[in-house]
Length: 427
Image (tube, rainbow, N blue to C red; front, side, top):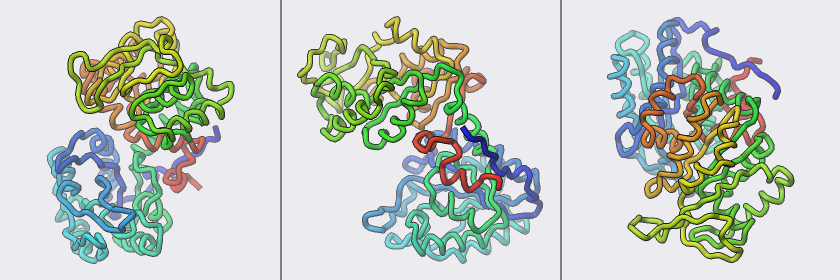
């Protein structure tokens, strides 16, 4: 893998400079901060900006308020940044204001002039930080047209320097990418840290065992095609594993689309000899319902006992028996690096498969353990709080703030291939 260097803001002169900072604080659910991990991860960058004399303006997206089909916006308190601001004010004991800007459902935010008085207050020291409204309310943020260029120019007027600390926001939008064309641009501390740890997936301590799950095969086939070549062993979960089983063994599984099965067949064919790297979880849990669980409504099957042509109801988890299987234990206990972007079960109903896998991974004390994806990390916290508390301070563990960003980098073949990262490389 070709090495590159990120242009870090630690080398920049920030004294009395207005610093526009893109963060990934997309953690608001129904008007409340669901999990502060992504916010906390950016605090070192915020504090360093202060230490270097800078005046920060933060911005993040929340949810998906822009409808790309209709070109309209949903403006609601449920996707406002106010809960994030309240958390930061309490955490950092700073005075933070959110500019009040005019919004419409048809056009979002088009006029940024009302930001100027707030910037003046920031420069005078009357407030310590600005936090812009949800970036996806801004007209042009996601559209990649003339409105995008206008937005980039308007945002660049308010700042001297741009810092991107939003590793998880990997899509090249105005606030993550286009802005770098108008202002001196640098990587934040979190961005630098995430990219450095992502290098461990590309240059791992061998053997590399990768675990990936998903609800649709089409969104994962690109990363999977790359990952199976990079890995020594690959474990699949969710729809990915169901589609693989259906394609390989001729099973019919409820809820599985024909498209998913066809893509699984293509994946098997295109993988060639690499397909032998797949570690087949020997036990699966079948449920009669996708919505609820009751006594007698689910059962565990041994995959090798299912003849071709077997029809199953919903398969929603890996059986706990998998983690007592000596072959499975040998794979995880013998790993040098374990990369996890997966929950094994449909977690609102079935959690044992995920809990069993994470416990088995933790039993390998020498492996580097890299976890990515919001659901992956949230389930770790909820299902194994004791292990999570220890893992948070264990150097053999690393928890990425963005799962989609990792898979995009894997598909591209390098942690430096993402457009948002390329824009921050030292020239």
